[in-house]
Length: 92
Image 1 (cartoon, rainbow, N blue to C red):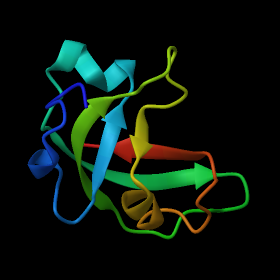
Image 2 (image 1 turned 180 degrees about the vertical axis):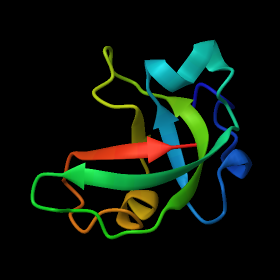
Image 3 (image 1 turned 90 degrees about the vertical axis):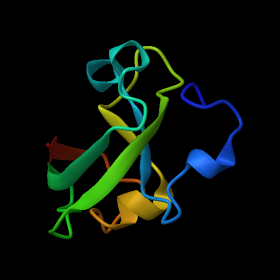
């Protein structure tokens, strides 16, 4: 990753991680930051309610990044019924 190279030990054991888009990335200062994220909408009502706590482990690898966060599959499953949905989120 852009945060820690190939050091797998830096990934959260629970697989709750994200890659950060430009808005959050902040030239790498976001590495290791934790965010609480919840789904607030999307086509087909994908939100499951509740929130997920995630850790930034990388920058989005496309430019421009299509979203604020790119979630691990395990993290996204905590907030969306549909693994392919485009969702709106709020985070803090």
